Length: 79
Image 1: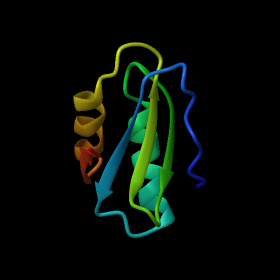
Image 2 (image 1 turned 180 degrees about the vertical axis):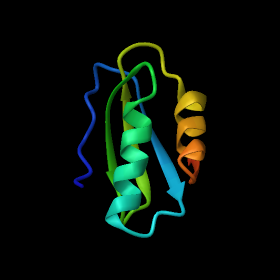
Image 3 (image 1 turned 120 degrees about the horizontal axis):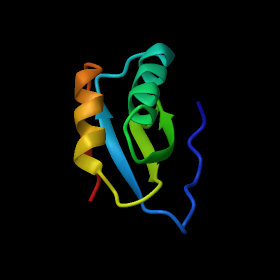
Image 4 (image 1 turned 60 degrees about the horizontal axis):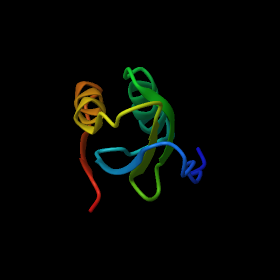
């Protein structure tokens, strides 16, 4: 998975994700994020333990964090 830059025209957030140990973990996190309503795109970087999320409308960071938690991982927005 590559960690791509997000478009500046859409709201975006970078999340730190704990608990990913392999590429399957990163894929599971990315699928969970993409299944969250309002998410336009997501890119997960296993090595950096980060997920870049771009929203189609108003950012719903808490919903994305909840989806990641439901997939079995911990996450928090980066400052």
